[in-house]
Length: 114
Image (tube, rainbow, N blue to C red; front, side, top):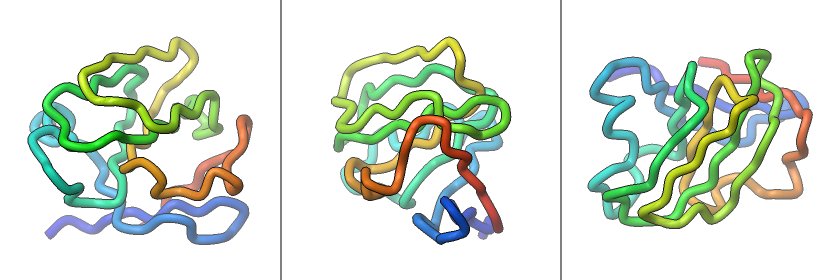
């Protein structure tokens, strides 16, 4: 089984069990066709747009620049929609509410560790 990532904000572990979508299949599939999430998050590197077609739950999206600083946060992104954020280089996708909104602010750096 592939090792999962942990998200740290301000030296505090905030979310574990993050899958890195690093193959064609994992990038294509994401949370599609799942009634319940198979991981607490999915990190899409080199990505600035996503869709929520064929998903069984709403998600939160964290768009990061090339230095992994938060440029846009979208909470409760509904099913059957698309989104594109020009300034983003990576996207963290989580089930809605997985990260406490009080812990996140625009410009903050997201650290992913194994």
